[in-house]
Structure formats: C-alpha cells, structure tokens
Image (spheres, rainbow, N blue to C red):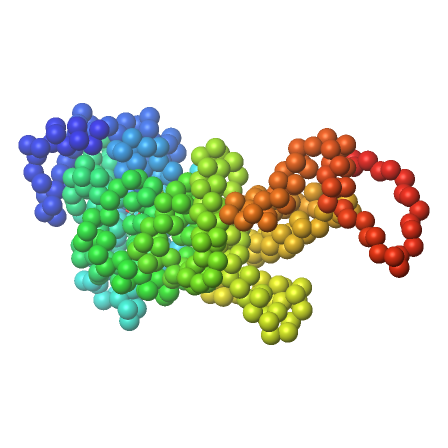
Length: 450
Ligand code: ATP
Ligand code: MG
C-alpha cells in the first residue's frame, strides 16, 4: 500500500525540506473516514467549524497507512488546551510536562494536543530543560510545521485533514514508511536527551510495526539509555505496561536486552540473568512473555502483576537464600526478601500497590501449591489468585523436572471428577508410620466436593 502511494507520488517534491511539505490528495492515499473512529471525526469537525486547524496525527494515521487498526486516535490543533475544553463539555485538561486535552466518549479517549513550537527559541517558562538536556516541560505552542518537527519519529508526523482529506508530510515520514524504517526527526542524540522515553518508543513501535530502527536512530540508544534512570518511576510504569502488554512482549524484551536498555528498567532481573540459574530463569521469562502475547492475541485478560512477578522471581529467590544463609528463618526471609525486591523495583518503575499485592500473592501461593493436603487444597482452589499462581507454576515447571510433577498434579486435579481428585490427594498423602504414634481411628470417608 505504502509503495503504491509512493509510486503515485514520485513526481512530487521531496518532503525533506521543512518549508515544502509533501501534500498527498485524497485520491492518492488510503485513509478513508470509515477507518477513523466517529469520535475522532466529531472532534476534528467541531474544531474546524470553530475556526481552528485540526488534524489527525500520530499512530492513527501511521497505522491506517500500514493497513493496521489504530489503537487510539490523536489530534493536533491550533486551539489551546483551554479552548479545546471550552468546546467540549466531555473533556478534561491533563499533564503538566506536556499539557493537553482529553475528550471523552464513553471509554474512548481522544487526545487533543496543541501544536508545539520550537522550545529552543523560547526563553519563557513554558519550556524547561534539565541539566542533562531533558525537556522537563514542553508547553511552547506553535504552528503545524513546527509541531511536525517536535514529534519523535517521521512516521509519527503525518497529518490528515478531515477538511480536505489531504495528507501532509513535513519530515519524510511516507518515504520512511515505504522503506519500513523508524527515523528520529532531527539529531538523534539531542532528541533522546530531550526525552529518553523516545528510546523505549523506538523499540516498542519498531517491534509492534515490524519496522527497522534506522542506523543513525539506533546508534546512540545503548549509550544514552542510562538517562532512563532520570525518568519518573510513574511514567516508566505506564511505558513498561505498553512495552509488555501490547502483544509483542517477547520481541520487545529481546530488543530491550539487545540494546542494553533492559537493565535500566529491570536492574535486579538483569543481574539475576547474569548470575546463577540464568538458563532456567531466562527460559521462565521467555515462556511468560510468549504466553502473555498469546493471551493478548486470544483476547484473554492479562495483568502486569503476573509479568512483574515473573521478572522478580529469581531476584526474590537469590535474596531469600542470602537472608537464610545469614540466619533468618525461611518464612521470615521470604517475606523480607519480597518486600525488599519490590522496594528496589519501585525506585525505577512505580508499581501501584494494588499490583504489588497481587505479585506477593502469586509468590506466596507458590509455596502453598506444594502442600497438597486436602484442607489446604480446599482453601487454595478458591483463592482469587489461584489460577494466576497455577499458571505461574506451570511456566516455572517448563524447564524444571521436579516442578513438572507438581504442575501436572494440579492440572489433573482441576480436570478430575471428585473420585479422581480423591485419588490424587491419596497419591501424595504419606501416612506417618513411626512406631511412637498411636494408631488413629479410621476416619469417615470424605469425598472432595466440587
Ligand atoms: P500508539 O498509540 O500506537 O502506541 P502513538 O505513536 O500514537 O502509538 P502516542 O503515545 O499515542 O503514540 O503518541 C501520539 C503521537 O504523539 C506520536 O505518534 C508522536 O507523534 C507524538 N509523541 C508521543 N510521544 C512523544 C515523545 N516522547 N516525543 C515526541 N513526540 C511524541
Ligand atoms: Mg496513539
């Protein structure tokens, strides 16, 4: 599709020069209104009717051009966030670093951002840069052309007008889409320094869209990824969710490791991967990522807590062992280790409490799954996190023969009818045969109830 558009446009001027955008008319591109959400169109029309410029931009345009269904729709406009809020009762202002308006249609959110200007030419308080060159605040408004050059990748800077249905390309995005590559607009080092999260976006989007990170854009990633440590832990929580729960987690994790970025997000995980049990832990992570991608593909629910529990499992084991060797009793050691491992992780990625509770539950259920006495089974199987803990055990078992038997037992138990369940319980229950014990009266036979 992109190639076709490009072939039809080869007689047009190049889009590389800022002042001469490539203008692609309706008959020469594949963006039709039926591929755009009705809510996004409503916002575009109302802004246009009120006399403002407004364009669909970002992932919405990029994904349609690639023949994909966009995840969400972003709009760029000449209206300020306050003017947008005046026009839409169903809207709210968000962000401080980057102020914008969200227009809400039920569960759908249309993100409306005011055209950004050149922050380097402004000495005002609207753009604030840190010592490392990071843009701490970027609220300098400008025009469409300036906005295009403030975006991250060329493929994200294509603008669709709902007024005349043209597509505007200021930065060579169409050319890059055709070449299947992601290229940062401007000098890559400066652009990563301004916002190191662009490193994560480069990796995430290239995996999701099957695009190559163009060599000059890829070159500084490993060296500059350290700057991610200056990004707020709350923002990295959002970004890590996008990295791991978009359906491309396996590929993305592999790239994060290849570019030596992973250790700035998951320091303890990477440390454990470089130490003991690395193969087994690596296989466990790999299996969890594949299973997460599969669940997303099959539209099954996923929780970030599960993957975080996986990523931190070996660090938890390592720390527990260390505490036990210093004399802490096992139960206390595992409790202390869980708290400490999560505390360390939260310094880089702010895991909200409701998820860290689930992580701890999945971990503690791993020990309870080893106890297959009837009383424990009854309460365990009704535990709200039993299923997650069982899935976790199955993944651990893939590369561990001892755990294979346990995981199979739980699988058979869940699949079994009550008689089979009773047999399974008996199969692991070893009655005590020591001489000192009195013979117990035989108990009434109890069936395991569903
Ligand atoms: P998707 O929504 O599919 O994950 P997207 O590219 O639309 O991908 P958004 O986070 O919705 O991602 O951002 C919308 C647009 O805003 C981007 O396409 C890009 O043009 C711009 N943008 C987002 N983040 C940045 C950034 N850190 N620096 C510069 N521009 C950005
Ligand atoms: Mg988007």
